[in-house]
Image (cartoon, rainbow, N blue to C red; front, side, top):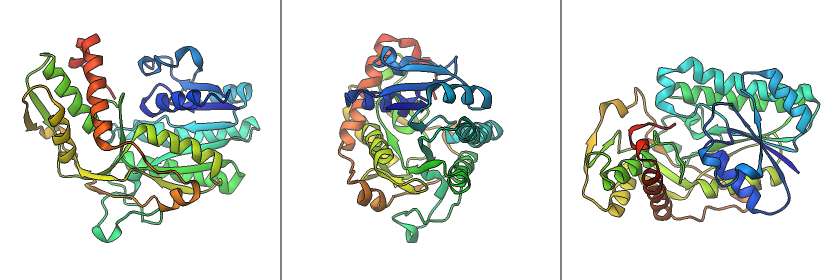
Length: 330
């Protein structure tokens, strides 16, 4: 079976490629990426997958690759995925996520292929909910609170439209908070872990800069998430949408305290106004009943292991590349 992953060089894409290869079922893995994309996350699989250069905004390149490869499954994970950046770059966010997804689906249509396509939407589409909305089901109204969330509403609906109009076999997911090793350091728990590791190594002052610590999130490990994605494309019906998420609910502050408990040095926590969003989503607790009932999937990795693995990742990464303590990765 031929599997194509957009955004394969990213956090989730690289974990997904590893997961499928570790199944040892003989699948051919193709990864779509831009020529300038860093390949660091692919260190374990670089020689085992085939990379295809293309930008999602280039319809002709997508069409050419799809006609040549003729994938059976497409995981569409590529996106501008950082909420705070979307406030500064709303047009680029909308272009990458909405136009890019439309180009991908149009390329499938023009290529006369019939893959199952995973459209990766986001729990951010639900926006700021009330306690009466909890747990959040797939029927919860959209209340997007950021340009990123708006872009994911568009991506989600484009995925549905191509199923309704052309019977292109899209399955949409609204993934709730997920994290793990290799997560970009602009995302909360990875940002905290990187700062802790840098302080332990003497690469920065013993201070952890934070944003809003009161937001409530239900956390899923990325390694559980990619397993869910693989089960989904092999089990679920086209045209459907599914919430996927963990089963461990904490505030961001709770997660930070767990990380600080693993630290090898004493640190100060300092709120940085630059890390506070103009509008924020502070309450996300999903209902994953629909997905679990159809697939039997359930998250297995405890939050403590996830957080320690993130911290150990940054300890190793900064030991090898101390200059990364001075850079920001998305």
